[in-house]
Image (cartoon, rainbow, N blue to C red):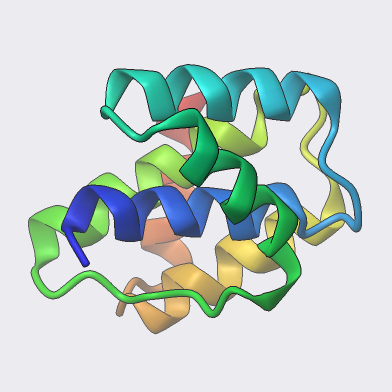
Length: 111
């Protein structure tokens, strides 16, 4: 699986973290999928299986930072930063090897 697809699957898993994929999240995922050349059919399958995805850890620090930044930006796309999303981001940051302080810096940078 390509890095772009792995990152996208991780965004899908983040979108369902609060139990539902909001319309604004669907729109954002559709836009991201289009920008990355992911066919709409594949997007629809991924959305239908969102609850089944396991978070995939990027293999290098540059990709890990990029993934965390994407997740934070995506979590804010619906105008809310809910507890479930923050919990998932915190868990992911820990799995990626970031400290709480480093995560706080990413969150602060994201505004």
